[in-house]
Length: 171
Image (cartoon, rainbow, N blue to C red; front, side, top):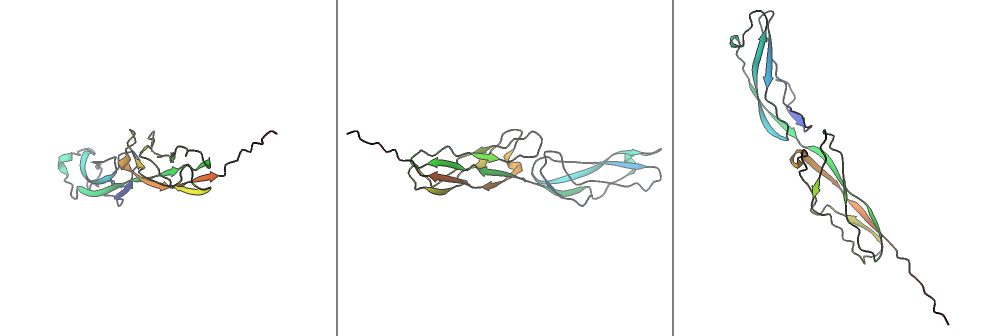
């Protein structure tokens, strides 16, 4: 078995490499192993698929140490609360996020839930955090939330002063 037993999810089948050498001159062994795609802990099993050489037969060989434990870890994905700006007295704008690329084929990340902010329509001018709230990764096939670890970055709600309207009375 190869020495690598820990992998990061990449959307492709993964497992430690398996290799066996023949002690018979001119014969080589083709060893296969079981693989998995999704994040998790697994056991890979190896077997001899074929033997090349003049008299090579699978039945002439026995593999030992045919299983190994390995793990496919979740891949980090960034979820960032988008910064917002509003005028004092205006209702809060919708709170949105930007999801970083998965880097895995055509997978597009998705979230469910809502962000939170302590800012309200009549909060004083200044800056307020936009927090994670109940935001969580959500399946959006082929994107599977269980294969990713969300790294959340909060945003900022900036409340600017309102411009008063001054009306002069006619005399």
